[in-house]
Image (tube, rainbow over all chains, first blue to last red; front, side):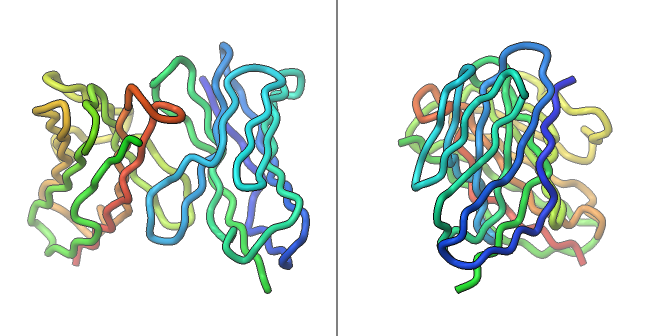
Length: 112
Length: 116
């Protein structure tokens, strides 16, 4: 079946540090890939997405590139802020609107 | 954009009682809604897929008689936790499949259920 594996957290960084959160996936077909962010006590918000190989999703300074050859979708940001502290989930879905499969989530803590 | 309203945001109930959580799509029709459960510091576990006008499809291991899902209209799905026990305490999140929106999924803000 489909699955998503994320690096374990928590990840603790100083403000303006470079961020990488690794995500790899297993899928039978050609999934769409997503990164969601969850702030404390809230639901999930879409951060970025990519729907086919070599696509790069980007939003709010975050980027991730769909790498079919390595089945990866690593999240990066060049300079994190305290306000980026949250839980980040990598997810996939096969087919538009089909159920999402989530990774375990990675807690990011940014210190000022 | 597509907005999903989930209510209540927090609820405390006594063991043995039932609790209903509502998920509404405010500006779009949602033929499909998803219910997730999230344990502390863990990922989201899909509980069931709710389709308007038909029975919900439950994931393996989820008790359908305990977690009743009703999707009576294109804008409302409800999850009722029946005969709640402390182990049902969790964060429940709904998601609706929108025809518009960045990725077709819009999430509610979640409901923190505490059973005492």
